[in-house]
Length: 91
Image (cartoon, one colour):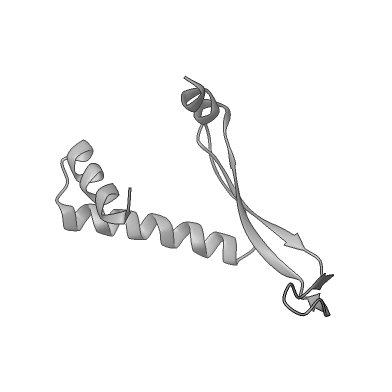
């Protein structure tokens, strides 16, 4: 499924037009992105939690040359599914 498919499903389920559905989806994704960029987590009860994990700098190896390199520290967005989502997927 891609973004267009998701927009079409939102339009079918809600009765909104496709352009309204696209605006809704874009706004939702922008809000999630903004909150994570600000270092906040976002919890949708029953669905899951979007949060940021910090990864420290570490040593690695270039697979081509075997040369040791330093991998910079970074923030990684993660998603932890909620109980209701886990149960729905198990079935």
